[in-house]
Amino acid sequence: MDEDTSAYDTGHIPGAVKIDWKQDLQDPVRRDFVNKSQFEALLSERGIGNDDTVILYGGNNNWFAAYAYWYFKLYGHGDVKLLDGGRKRWELDNRPLVKDPANRERTSYSAQEQDRSIRAFRDDVLAAIGVQNLVDVRSPDEFAGRLLAPAHLPQEQAQRAGHIPTAISVPWSKAANEDGTFKSNDELASIYGAAGLDESKDTIAYCRIGERSSHTWFVLRELLGKDNVKNYDGSWTEYGSLVGVPVALGDEPGQA
Amino acid sequence: MSSDTLGCGAPEQSAPIPVTVDLGKETVITGVVRAGDEPVAGAYVRLLDASGEFTAEVVTSPLGQFRFFAAPGTWTLRALSRSGNGDATVAADRGINEVLLPVAAA
Image (cartoon, rainbow over all chains, first blue to last red; front, side):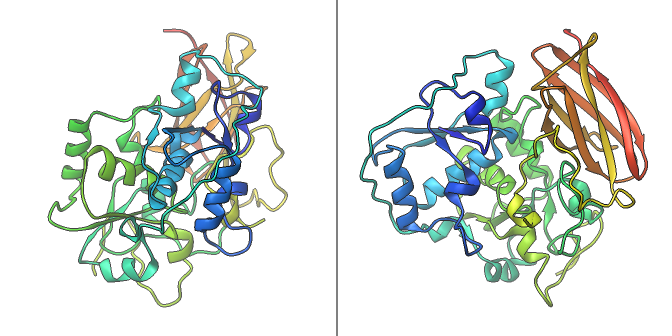
C-alpha cells in the first residue's frame, strides 16, 4: 500500500493500492482523522480485508506510512507492517515501480473501537508535563523555537514557537539512517537512553501534526517493545495554539 | 489552505514559491542537483543544521530542483540519488540563497 498524496500515480510498487493521507485519512470538516465507520468504508473500498497482511510504505522517510500504521493499530487491524526504508530505499535500489493502479475486489471491513491506549489528547499532555516522558521529535531548531515548521515549508504560522516544558528533544531522524531505514535495535535503545527517556514512566511523543511522532511511536512501541507509549496527533499545531498553556523556549527541556 | 492542512509533506519542488510567502522574512535555500551537466530528478536532498542534524528533506523536481525554507546560518545539503551522492554547505541569509549540489557515484 502506497501512502503518498501524489507519488502513487507516477510509480508505485506493483500490487500496491493508494491511500492518500489528506483525502482518505483526514476528516474533511473537523480537525480529526477518519472515524471508525469512515475507516471501515475506506478499507472496504480499497479491497482490504480484516485478515489481510497490510504492508505500508511511503515517501518522506515513511512518516505518513508510520502515521497510517498507527491508524491501523488504533482501529485494531491485526497484521500490519511498515516497509523498512519506504519508497526512498526502494527507489535508490532501482526496484520496479509501475503506473497502473492495482484493483482489488471490494471487502466488508470491520474495525474495532479506537485503542485510546496509544492516542494522547491535549489534556493527557498537560497532565504529563514533569510527570511522564514527553518526547519532542521535531528538528532541534523547531524544538528551540528558532523554526516553526520543517524547513521545506514556509515558516509563517499562527502558533507560538517552542516546545512543551520538560519534553526531551529526540528528532525522529535519530532513529533512521539517511536512506530511510531504521537503525538497529541496539542503536535505538542507546539513543533514547542517552537522551534521558525514563524507562519507569509512560511516554507521549509529539511533533507538529503527528506524523513524525508516529515514526517515533513505531520505534518505541513496535521495535523496542515499550508499553504505554502514546502519539499526540494534535501535536504542536494544537498545543502551540492553546491559550494559557506553558511553553518553553531554547534547547533545554525547561521546568514544569 | 492553511499550513495545518498542508501537513508536513514536502510540496512539489518545481512549483513557484507561493505568493503568500514573504521573501523579506524567509531564508530560502534552493538549487539544482546535477550529475555532470545533467539535472537529477528524484534525488533525495536533506538539509542538515550546523551540528549535522537532519532538518528537512525533499525530492527534486523533474529539472532537479530543490527548495528549503530555513533560517539565517550555516547549513549542509546532502543528496542521495541513483546517480550518486553529494554534499554542499551554504552560509544562508534572508532571501533567496542559490546552491549548486553536484552528485557523483562513489
